[in-house]
Image (tube, rainbow, N blue to C red; front, side, top):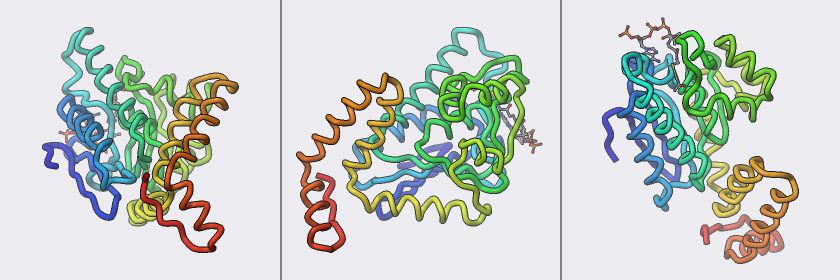
Length: 260
Ligand code: CAA
């Protein structure tokens, strides 16, 4: 796959997607959003890919937000369309039946923080900075920040970040649960790779059901969510992976999952 604003690599079941506009700190213009949407849509049916790592090019930024130069002159209708494009991308990443790990290697601001928020796991380098600085620009987050941030870190902390536009460092992001782990910059991608390999070694259908149970369950009441979990648990027993996983345990050997 070749793109103007993205780099793509896939080996041993792990795809790495790199937003590649380092001169603009990987800001998301419309073209980059469309490329990300196209790539993540295609990954759904890419059997060779089990886990995806999403990161930014260069040493300074994951993604420093939506592209301010491109947004500055647009009108209300175009602004809404731009936000809907960001939402479509976020939903596509959340609906992808494979885990997506954000390797946050610097600034993750505005749309960049929102991009990290729709990933399943966030690892941060020590120089990572998170924030929703939209109020500094006279706007609000447009790619889901007002919704996903409070769902992840709680309403009060999210409110403070969203209303002040303050940036927080990696240690603070870890403390409040925005980052799962903080690593020295040089260790970020190797750590993301190691985590991806570990997850890729598990039953892929079970891993995708975990993602589905979390995604759908957290958006509904506990009774329905638990019913959905029971449905998915039952469905596991229709897979060869369940037979193999449990047999392998009983035979005291590693399981060989076929993803079937
Ligand atoms: N859009 C467009 N260009 C951007 C950008 C963005 N979000 N962020 C940085 N850049 C560009 C700068 O304009 C600069 O370009 P030039 O070299 O051509 O001047 C280049 O990237 C390097 O940036 P700086 O010189 O500013 O680097 P710095 O180290 O001094 O500061 C920074 C880094 C604090 C991240 C600063 O660039 C910054 O504040 N960027 C904007 C962050 C922001 O407000 N993001 C939210 C955007 S709105 C949004 O995302 C809405 C939404 O939810 C959809």
